[in-house]
Each structure stands twice: as C-alpha cells, then as structure tokens.
Amino acid sequence: MSNVVRMLDNRPFPDLTVFEFAVASAISRQVIATDEELQEVLSDWFLRQVRPAEVAAALDSMAMRGLVRRGGETLCGYGLTSEGINAVATLYGGCIRMIDRGLGLLNTPMILSLLNLIKETRHA
Image 1 (cartoon, rainbow, N blue to C red):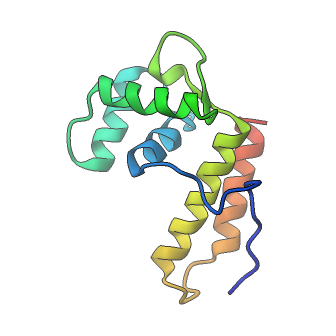
Image 2: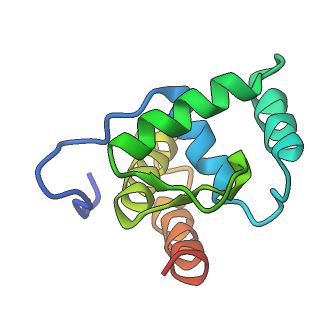
C-alpha cells in the first residue's frame, strides 16, 4: 500500500453522505456561477432532478460541522473551509483508490496532486 497522508486530525475519515460529498465537490468548481447551474451539475451526476431544498439541507448540515461557509444569499455562494477541503480531498483519494481496487492502474499520486493544486489555487 502506498503512503497515505492523514489529512484530518482526529477522525479516520470524513463524516459526509454521498450527496454532501457531491455538493461540496460541486461548490468547489469554478464553472458553477448560479444556483441553477449547481442543480444542473448535481442532477447530471445523480441522473435525477435535484431540488434546491435538498442542496440547502446538505449545505446547512455541512455548515453546522464547519465544512462550508456561507458566501452570500445563494446556494452556489457557499465555499469550502479548510476542514471541508481536507474532507473532500480525503474522500476523493479514497474513491480513486476504491475505483482502482488496489491494482495500481490509476496513478493515484498524480491524481491527488492535481487535487492539491486545485486546493492551493482556489481555496488557500
């Protein structure tokens, strides 16, 4: 097994639902400029209509845990906190390794370094 850098202080892995993880991932994208675009992206990922109330509930839950911060009156105005960035990066790393199934077919360190680059340029 490759070296794994532990990104969170005292938790073995972030406590996010799949939908919360998706919402956190979506709000960190540069291409999301409106709430409608946010809903479109999430609906496309899940192949079903995502309602604003579902997104708002996920964001409220994550805000109470300190993973996101409100950046205005819109849903797409939320942003990831440092803890949120760590949670998303940790889960992405786990997903990449899970998809690879330990076969080493995916260059996990390279993919994770891209996530670090995004983290540094967007949310530092």
